Length: 253
Image (cartoon, rainbow, N blue to C red; front, top):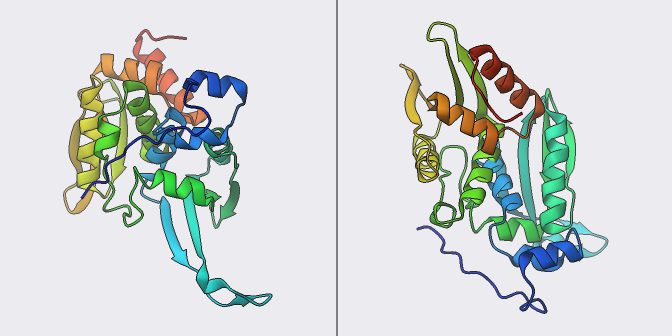
């Protein structure tokens, strides 16, 4: 059953608007109570990538006489692949939302972003269930009912994690695609895109494997994606730009 989100009053800030709180300080404790902001939305979208980790575990043993089994450890981890600088971007989103940076480290051949912030974990769990994994995630009702700018940032985080720009020589077509092993999740991401005016398709990528492809293929949708959603990962955004120039399509510089 999907969790229903209800906004929490801002203690000590009931008479202030969100822009006023942001203007007073880049990060304010009240920002963690503002519901699904664009910054948080991008973090949630990135967690939907096939290698994201979002879990809470019981600790074990003793440390300097303290029984660690009384505590839990929260893990927020996003696979960055070879894009270390994307981890720095994730850190800025965390700082703007929760006042903590997180860290970026090399895990084998891939970079990962990691945070153990309890505040961030419990806040984001309103939109991404800790029991989910790459096969179970979906876009929840609070996200589908959010303003368009929030939906766009969820999509950006997701396409940063699992998406890529594509140019088909056979079709002479530019597209933006994302692949996943989660059919229900991909269908719900398609639904999110439809609510903000896109017309994506979902296809099985391989005949003998349950791998699904979400595709934004109409020229006007691809241009709109570049202008409004885009990739936070610089190399992906630049690649999409080159494809659009190659095709002769007009977009915002």
